[in-house]
Length: 110
Length: 112
Image 1 (spheres, rainbow over the protein chains, first blue to last red):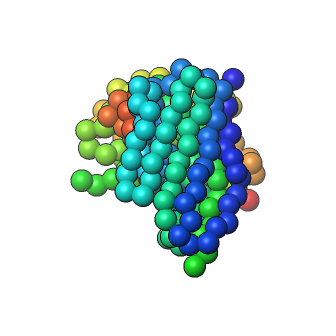
Image 2: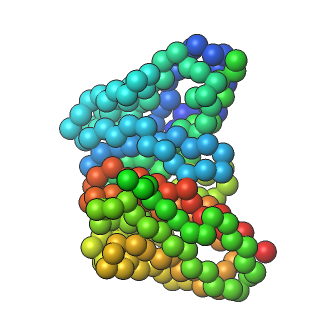
């Protein structure tokens, strides 16, 4: 069964901290993996797409890494800001469907 | 270019009724997927359509059905609504099945 877990479930940090969000998936036969951000009651905003052949992908203050063989991905956020407060979801893509984790709820305090 | 659009934004229905949700993908995208997101959980996959054919189905009862039209827009139908069907329904489009997905704002369905 394809399952995704995310650790931690929730995180509260002061502004300016660097932080790491973790994602684990049980089935490593992925095409790619996407990280999303979701604000309360809203749709999903794509942050990064990392292909199965890639190790890392960067966009601004965000860096995602992928270790396909061990079924792990991490999202690194540098110099966090209050505007980063949201739920972060990882989703490996198996071709027919994405499987989402439960998300990490991030609060960045001013 | 316009992003993925969904209608309606909000919907309130009574148990036992039927509902139809609509999705228009990004221009040029041929794949549309539907997800259900219950409050506090990650989205759960319902259907994927590519080139007007069903290519994937999640673990949902037969009360859920969908279709994709020649212009690649899609409808999700849910019959015999239950209280547990209350959720945010998300539509995503992509150029092909294994490509990056782009999500719409969702339709909030409340069943009373």
